[in-house]
Image (cartoon, rainbow, N blue to C red):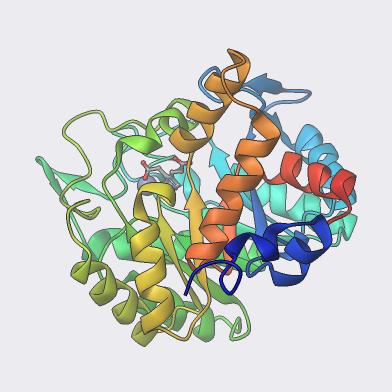
Amino acid sequence: MGYPRIRMRRLRSSPIIRDLVRETHLTRDDLIYPLFVCEGRNVRQEISTMPGVCRLSIDQLVREAEECAAAGVKAIILFGIPAEKDESGSSGFRGDGIVQKALRELKTRGLPLMLITDVCLCEYTSHGHCGLVRGHQILNDETVELLVRQAVSHVQAGADMVAPSDMMDFRVRAIREALNKNGFMDTGILSYAVKYASAYYGPFREAAHSAPGFGDRKTYQMDPANSREALKEARQDVIEGADMVMVKPALAYLDIVAMLRRELTVPIAAYNVSGEYSMVKAAAQKGWVDEKAIVLETLLSIKRAGADIIISYHAKDALNWMHEDKKF
Ligand code: PBG
Ligand code: ZN
């Protein structure tokens, strides 16, 4: 049974043989890059908790999008940071909202980039919750109506796909029906179907000034202890009309990604979230880890777990590194 019949290391003995037997490949087609757009001109304000990620005014966003397209980014997901926030997040669904204006501007450039938008209230509400608040309750059905308005107005402004991230029940069905009614039958929905109430979103909330003013998101986002519930959420969203489903965060939830890959036929996206990004950046800045190697290994691991698509703040760097390596 032993050597020389068995020698595991034979298939690892040269770069060529390793390339031949490699099971998982990270490719340029797998990555979506998140961008934050804010009001103003010539704004390029680095987010203190996320080195290398900026809040961009529309002029700078356009520049960034052009650079992304040149680096081989195929799709971006847009987050809006409005000038004003109110109880109902009304700046999120106005025709002259920040995301709507950005979409119109990007569309005129005809870049080879798919434009996805995050649909949620928390970036636009004064209280920072993802839904309408009554007392200390986050309302479901009333929130869904506003999410629908936001989604439709994004698509009217040029979004190619909408990604609701609020975790209200039945919002995918409502958004699908509203898009259809408005003639957008061919515009897809990437549902944040399995979104956990996670501490890994901390740096993002600093970026979008969207930390909840009271309480937490545990009455709508999922309990990190649950995995059967993830399958229930994802199946439900597919029934309601989601074209793709997302697991978020990615790294502490790769078991969930793998389970959904086994159980579902729709494409699975995983969101390599802000906290995951910031930890790598912090360690890299201290010289404690090799950033490029860590990032490429991390993205590969998400792919190996079963994700078809990875949303990551590392996407642009990763694409540039992949070009350098020529292996991709
Ligand atoms: C908005 C939204 C959040 C993220 C994506 N969409 C924040 C949250 O739910 O608190 C997190 C992204 C990240 O951490 O990178 N609902
Ligand atoms: Zn939200």
